[in-house]
Image (tube, rainbow, N blue to C red; front, side, top):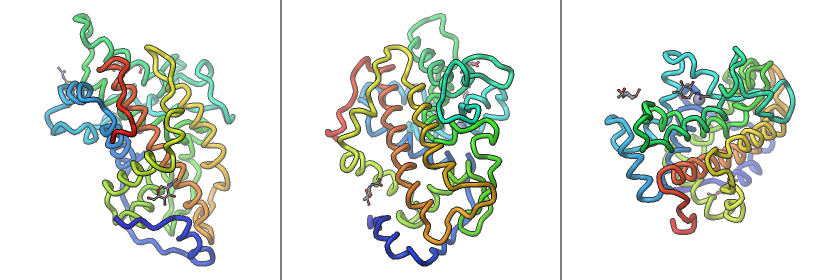
Length: 302
Ligand SMILES: *[C@@H]1O[C@H](CO)[C@@H](O)[C@H](O)[C@H]1NC(C)=O
Ligand SMILES: *[C@@H]1O[C@H](CO)[C@@H](O)[C@H](O)[C@H]1NC(C)=O
Ligand SMILES: *[C@@H]1O[C@H](CO)[C@@H](O)[C@H](O)[C@H]1NC(C)=O
Ligand SMILES: [Zn+2]
């Protein structure tokens, strides 16, 4: 698959506009972001983990985890209590603190994405416990989704603007909001411009970066010394930092994000791709720990 180097393209587009034609699409890290995260994760599951995951998936998944990764967004309104589990928010500061920030609007502690990732991990760890009455199919589908969400920087943004949802921006002739730009637009634009609108090609591009350009960082991404709880809290802290450094930066109310140079797109796309890669690898890590003890599949072996 031919992939145009963003840097090369930036060179050609510095003083012109790229006109981008595409159909409106998508909702929440959008569907595509979640599917990509889970497709990456699937590459790094051990045999045993993959088998246990397949056993828990609903019939309709056809044995493919990635098909159920957007599910949590679909039940967000049916399961109203689950709505605050898709994100964490800070009181307008560039650091995230569990004790201060992880709660729902009623002030219930733990009702945020970090709490949920640990909650569903616990439930799955107790799979063999006969007194475990949780629906573990749902636990798996929630876990896979929330590990994706916590890596989207604006799922750890500021409470006052609802993680960028109230910041109206223009994205290549379309009206959007900053949160949606990070959930959907950057991914859609990249997929259209560089991957012939093919999700699998974009996943392959990200996979190649994991074994290539990012290979020296990957061990650090996977580091997590917590035994039972996950390292979701650290992922939230990273996201908040990225929200301040990249998402909110140069994105004021009513701004035209593409500007004249497409700079916002070209400088944020690598962040989005890396977060998808990290989410996928870390989801695999969590699932391997749950279902196959401490084992994790070597990155190099793929
Ligand atoms: C990822 O790989 C592509 C080539 O497929 C390369 O152009 C790009 O610079 C790499 N890095 C990032 C951060 O996307
Ligand atoms: C934990 O999971 C149960 C079952 O889905 C749910 O009722 C509860 O609200 C969850 N709590 C958190 C913090 O995710
Ligand atoms: C578990 O949850 C799934 C998805 O919501 C549902 O289809 C299934 O019927 C549930 N299983 C049980 C035993 O309730
Ligand atoms: Zn979500």
